[in-house]
Amino acid sequence: MVTGTEGFSTQLAAKIWGHRFMDGQKGAEYVLEFLNVLAGTDYQLNADKYKRTKAESFRKFIFEGDKEGSKNDIVELEAEKKAELYKEIGDKDRVMVVREFFRNLEVPLYDGRGNLANRSWYAKSLYPLHESLLFFELRKKGKSISYERNFFARGGELYYLMLSYGTEGQDTIRKEIQNRIRELLQKNRSIENIVEKIKDILCDTESSDSDEALLKKDPNNGMECPELPITEHPLFTKFSNEFHQVIHLNLDVYEMFHLLISLVCFQIVRYMYERTKQREEDKITMFVDCLDGQVSQILKLSSQSFQQNEIMVHEKFDTELSQLFIDKVNEMGDIERKLTVWRNNPDEFFKQFGLGKLRSGKQRIIKLLNKCNAYDEFIEQMSSAIQEAVSSQLKKHQLSIIRGVVRDGGMGGFRTGTNYRYFMTDKFLEMLVLSNVKPQCSIEFSEFLQHIYEKYGFIVGEDQAKISGLYEKSKLNISYFQKNEYALREKLKNNGLLVEYSDATAMIRNPYHSVREKVSL
Image (cartoon, rainbow, N blue to C red; front, side):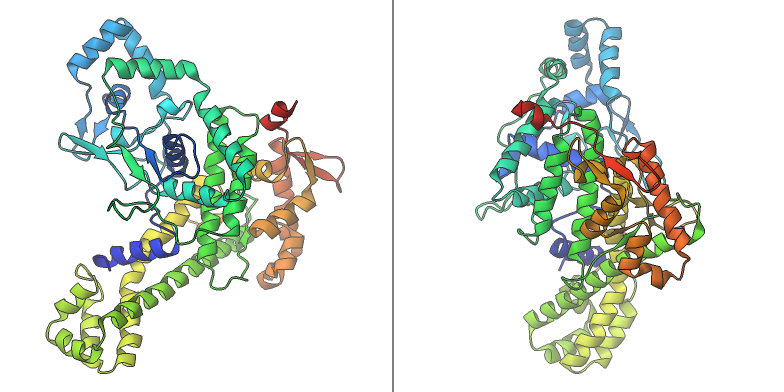
């Protein structure tokens, strides 16, 4: 067990979800990481390792003047390199115009309250208009620059593995995903030419060997690598098919990037919920507030729906924590003898169970050590005490991961004075239609509502509220669900995704063409 309650939390999350998702990670970073990994494998979804790009001097050039770390230092490109830029590109004004162009491509990252995230220059990213603008987050310690693995190369690697597993046995879809992403990220050659010229001037070369990272365990190498607790699941195939459909829409890479943020975040949330279900047959439901928080009854019902799913996650972590403790105890053996040792030296107990940095709950655990005499009594009472001590960290770190992904994907969030609830932003709604309705095809609105209920568990209107049992449980008048459904219909209409032929007939349409259609002509 790792040291401290946060260690428990991280270890459990790795066991349930994979190694590992971070609560500070933003939705855009998941997509950027994935694109970095895929480009680093030369666009192969079955690779064992990938190359990383540092682009240190290029980034100093772009973000010169920004903060550097927590000590309020300011990043500055070396004087001789700036002089070389002026010499090769032209005067200072021309160089500043080039820099301003790239500065305007910075991907804005926001915290839970909608404020810009406070990131140093080496943790900032650019819109992936070309693969030459992809690079990994760095860590700066003194004058040393290395790769940072707290945010980058975590969730993006895990999502890569999901698509890798999801395309097993689907060779055509795998090849088409690989080729389409390559096409999107290599199309803007004019940007590539400018970036490569600046890198050449700055001598910003990449190492071919030391900058490789593993995607699969190598018994001869002790390097960390990403790992999902499962390699086969129907969700992974669904993720691959949805991803395949969205990326083949005839859109430019900038528009595609924003759709992918919603799609990838939504898929990660579904994966996390699926992995925390108590029983395989359980259906996860999400009641969506389509009235923008204007109707208190609908807002409250959506908040309750969100809270119920958080309770499900919390209960799963509690169950796994108890099992983790039992497994650790059984590994030690001869607990009666060890209890005598621990009573005399409680610090030894905390050390053996990785709780040396535990802040709250220590006294209760010490009392239990003095009280427990038998194995069964020790397991039952100590498991409960440790669970209580670690619970706050589980809530702080793991539930915040889901909240962040839900928020960044556009399928939920909160306003001041309210709890988290499910809703759908315009971009999320667009993604939902484009990933479920074939290009240039239509589907009846009522059929669409039933489809997203059966596939995802989304409850919006009257029919799904009755089928799920929510209507009866809520004790609300049916008119509330009807108003909620009508609000979604209006939102789809305003976004150009729904056409009304009459009060009774409304069709949801995917207005885009697929680039695959062009290829076949």
